[in-house]
Length: 180
Image (cartoon, rainbow, N blue to C red; front, side, top):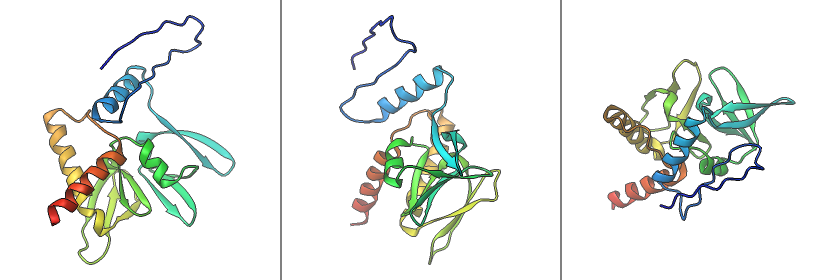
């Protein structure tokens, strides 16, 4: 990995650009580290009626679709989101995971999963009465990711993340290969 510093005295604000051939765990960790140094958290522009809000990603419990509208849920509010679900998968960090065709959750806020063998299982969140469903096809992936996060957290490695979309695709491929 090359590291290069360019000084441009005309810049109004410092800017860090990461150029990479692919988005991998090392690049995501570097991006997260730089963001943390600046004391800023990544925010997402969300809307409620006619007002735009810039909500820190860590405050979002989950995203879901209702009809054609994508909604972002926090502990006590629901916002409209201007993205498509697949676009969010690309943007979101490894803290987020798709758990159904229409839902992405923040793994940091999951309190419990009530398993249902014949239908979708119920997901509940810390500090909120909100609930959503994980489809049977994503249940195993969700529980494995939660278990892995607990193990990594205990080992002090919780800071390593990769794109939610990248990790999900790898884990789905691995799950599909182990079935056959």
